[in-house]
Image (cartoon, rainbow, N blue to C red; front, side, top):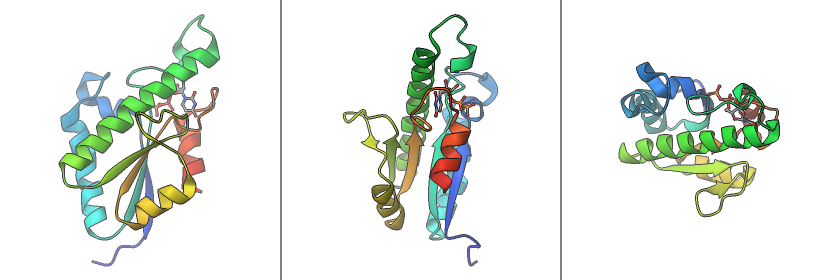
Length: 148
Ligand code: UDP
């Protein structure tokens, strides 16, 4: 079957990754989301994924905390998910890379558009963490930015 799109971007919310347990990562659920991704990659479609972090932390639900600090915690939560999704894909035989909007060189690559496109062109899935990299935003905005 000829794919309709050459490249797709998928947004996975943190809640989706938690499955029935509602918080944390449920790897059976992550695998369920990664299976169609593998099918797409096998068809030659380029796939990028933006992950949320609400299964661990949401800045706006942090009560009296400093909002910027709370949102940094939320962005770190997205990185936990990005690493979990990438690892699941790798275990399924799909090459995957994590790129984050905030620099954490020992953990993942920094987001660089050209580098992300190069990964995609080689059939690697790129999993984006940290959303936009800015507090007061959400990973939905990050997904829109990465999509364009
Ligand atoms: N976040 C942020 N800037 C961004 C993206 C996310 O500060 O560009 C923080 C924010 O605290 C947010 C948390 O990360 O609540 C988790 O992201 P989001 O709520 O979008 O995750 P989802 O609802 O998709 O699981």
